[in-house]
Amino acid sequence: MSPVRGYFHPKTGSGASSLIPSPPWLYSGDLLTVEYRTDPARVRELLPEPLELADEDPGAVALIWADWQSCSHSGAELLDPVLSQYKEAFAVVRCKYRGQTYSRCVYIWVDKDFAIARGLHQGYPKKLGSIHQTRPHPYGPAPRIEAGARFGATLAAADRRLAQAVVTLREPAESNGFVNAHPMAHHRWLPSIEKGKGLALDELVETGAASSEAGQPWLGEAELELFEAPTEELARLEVREPIAAYYRQVGVVWDGGRLLEVGTSGASAG
Image 1 (tube, rainbow, N blue to C red):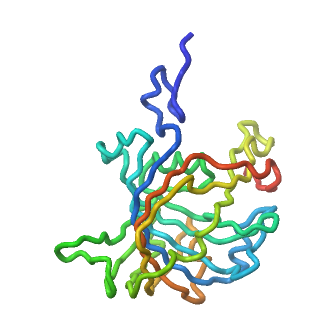
Image 2: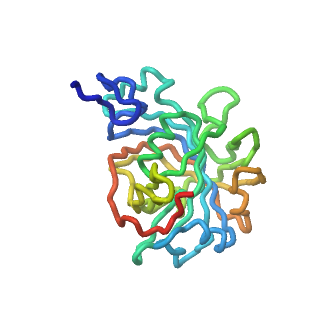
Image 3: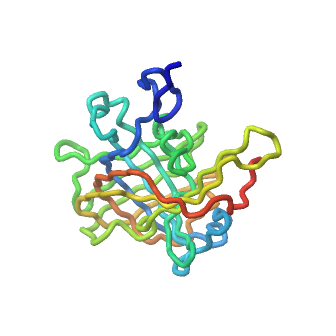
């Protein structure tokens, strides 16, 4: 018998139908980041064992919009843009594991199926959503990347708007914020096919960029609103105090992660 091929489902004789190719995955993107403080108890409820709240600024949150072009090592997807372009919005908090500070994505929405598949592999809790953000351009009415430029961003899922922001750039900055500045601590979970058997996959993993490059970050202020929705809980991370907003263009290579622990999260399969 001939083996079936492909990095992910569906696997076929040729492997050409696989939803995603094997890593490395390469990304070019425009990021809008809004940092604020919420109730640390709302962050704590999103951290399964053995993760703990970060020692400093435990209620800090980053809500990030990203307009991506991504591809495999060959770069072929860039010439068939439906396979490379997608948008996402995600909420990041910080946590502590064995004394080290990590970032952790607790909510994330994307608008393409291949991005969801990559998230399943990486431990990102991706769901489908509708994400939009203002794109900069050097001509016409679009904002330039300069002081006073204003960028809008919206997030919706299941026909409900979940968040909207307006970011006004003020000046060049030294960084793109601090909440999403650490390696990611994520869980990879998969329930057993047999009822009552718990999780067939239960891993705590560390992931991050294998390499990256980035343009000049810009600092600014944001007007951010979060909205209640029947099947989403982003609004529980309510805005108590604004911190700052940022804009930056980045290039990132993702090429795998590192296993930290197996079977210790106590997460339910139901």
